[in-house]
Length: 341
Ligand code: PLP
Image (cartoon, rainbow, N blue to C red; front, side, top):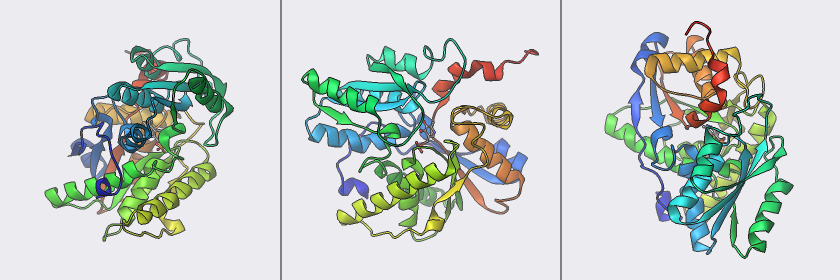
């Protein structure tokens, strides 16, 4: 329905696949399904930003911009997808690639996401330090550089999140889930989703709250900063409600309890896996051949497995939103080194 209210440039293959995780479900005695936004795009291994960028790229094209400018970590999935979207629609991209964590590996700035960005002809600008959802000088300088060269930049914040249109992609995801549920004759009582810059969870919260039957959207914090994540998700969710209502869409009023952030699986820091993260990644890989990464989905699958083991979902159906991230695995080979094999 949001297609009728806002221009959208198709970049992904939607609806994304939805399937039951048979072996994990049996092991955890809980019915668990996965919605595979990690395989929902032909653009450079895809991921959750493709769904968000459909609305931002439409806006950029309508405004006559020729260059997408964004920011993220060196191994950012987001900046790789910004570069991919730009390539696919014939725009340029400039992406500031900061150091958001200490991961001592000589190939960290050479393989995975950053390699794909280079192959796609992006302009990664290495520099800047520390994760934050607030604006950065490095990003402002990149915008200036594009203007100085006569280009017309379109600014996209980290994660395409704190942007007026940032929540639309995952508000629309909620409609997509409802449509698939109807086809299958099932209902998901719980959605488990990795959360960081916030617009994925925020969009879902808004989209699902607009539906008749209520359910939980459980955000597994990956920023290792529960307060910052909660602020980001709350702001984007409320802004998205207002935006949709302002265009004649359904008016949704959220309560604090609608924003559920679980901080227990985010450690030891953003971008660094715990032993439990690595064990969960191995479990999903060994049991479902479903690849998750140490930065985001490894933490959300850890949360799902642990909460299921503790009986949180007894008698309920759970949907795991797989948002991508596997390209970063190459940069984390050390976390999986095993002297036995
Ligand atoms: N999962 C993956 C693979 C991501 O790249 C991101 C991006 O930050 C997230 C989850 C979290 O999404 P968001 O930043 O919208 O909260």
